Length: 216
Image 1: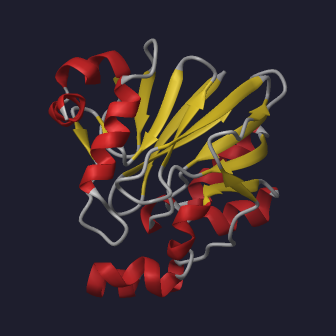
Image 2: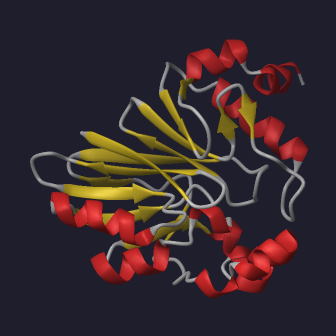
């Protein structure tokens, strides 16, 4: 397994390219912008991209989806609860003038596979599981890769969590989702949607929002 991290777009979104070194079958998580850069890497390694995996559908996690899907034929995997964000106006209007500047870049082709908690996918000998974690958006999902990695999107950050003040956000739901992650057995590498990497065990002890969630 190889994982390459890219920081893309104006708000420094973490995008992850995952692939198997032998089969070169792969997936990309949250391609939020800079499609040309991401496609250049995919093409240089000759990755056979199978899935475009989205932890949620905010603009800063999806702006490169259309270009990558057209170039690779990969299937878009996203939570149906975030379908309200598939429309440019609905997605970008909360961000005022900045959102209007992004209208021309908005290029989302829709979903090929809807995420549910019973969905299981595989590529390159690796297995994916999904956990519903609303709070940042209704359709936020944690993506578990094998038994070692959690792509946590904007639900769980290193010693922090995602904002809940945008349309569809909910602080009570965020606390429930953080408690759900706290209660996952074992430890995992935490690869979030922004900022630095972490581990689930570190977040259990050092994340004030997760600790608050456990107490409620």
